[in-house]
Length: 470
Image 1: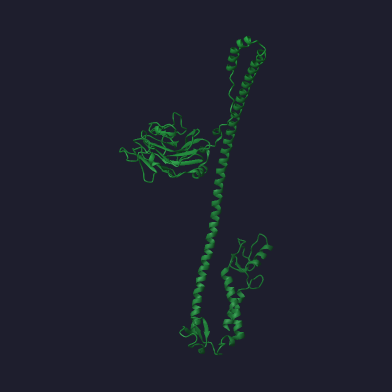
Image 2: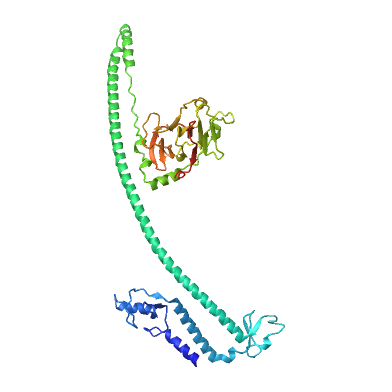
């Protein structure tokens, strides 16, 4: 009787105070009362802006109630208990009898998880299995179920905590994405402004060159018109001279030839725009954009041991070169530099865009750049090889064949070299600051390769990645 009353009380607690039916998708509001999710939403929809409890009239601060998963599982358990009690009262006799022997089921096989009567145990079945009385087996199972309940409750709590953490992470992600979005917007606005300014400057240079080229074309046309006029003046007497006697004709031939030979056609003017005037310099790019350009075109350059001067020691990984007083033993290669302490690098370049970076020392003299890959032997044996494009560090300043470099740096930790074969440009940058030093504009004949010069009192030069000096 007491068990029935307890079950009835439990069923009463599973009712929704609004629809008076079993709770569906139960939710809990701030005051602690439980409702069907749809019922409380419909109730609050009638009273816009007010979220009071239908039971205690407590004014809730939040419109979104919290799902009560544990209560939903308890409701399902109560329903199963009620259904089991009903089935037990209707067919208790049949459910506790063995269908095979029509005996009362008093035992439980732990191996097969099956109810048994005394006659079920024999040589043919369940022999050697662990068989226990029903009461003992049920008590053991209840203990296990209680353990499962605690385990599931613990896992449910962990799941709720995980949900809370994930929600916090979602908010943090949104904030981080907004910050990154703002940063990207600022960078692209800066880049767009720089691009606009550079575009206007390029348009101005293009207009100046167009006007200059147009004037040269007009001057060339005028020169050809003047030349044509003089030819016409020479052509008119020819018709007259044909009618002269032999002696008269021959007496004027010498003057005629002299006049014709003195008239020289002016050279035609070749229209060609200077592409270097409209190239977008890397130094104008923001750091993030320049970093992507550098990464895209970075080359893995190594030193060519066969070209190294005898006083240069190249490391095993072919990434570092040092000047040493003791001459190194090596093959008598025709590629080797013999006068100037120079070593060349791989690979060779004849097209495309390429970037590499060199860590340099703080003292004495060194040079980096490019040179012709097929440099003649006489140039390799010269103290100042021709066919090279390089910048030289003179101990306290840069020297570029008498030119004035842009950089005011008194020292660079590393030098970035950017080769654009299509535009015919070789640019040098102080790294990691990425400050422009100097740009060569030239036509590089054939393949070229990296060039490295190191003085007797200089520190080693080391090839590194694009970010290696940072």
